[in-house]
Length: 139
Image (cartoon, rainbow, N blue to C red):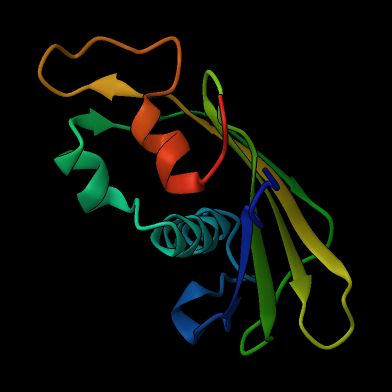
């Protein structure tokens, strides 16, 4: 069985209200861009937040790391790539934000989510089968 393409890219154009007093995108807004890409990736596999809830699991982020390489600016076209790199015991995603024109890296990041049973609030130490089924991967 071949592993499906576990990545997705979106385009983001920073609006005026994302710019700080230094004329660059305020550092906190990059998390929003990552979230947009993560949601698009999970929606690609029909396992977005609503489907997660319906399956009985919440997937809180327990770790988020960002590395800023260069500042993004107002109206700059950015490509945000999200890729699932682990899914066995946790859902780990790597991200890259690049300038859409030059391909230069602006930011890289990693997030880790864990499955939590909504009814019991207990963390699952192995990802639920529903995630594997949605992603089309084997245990």
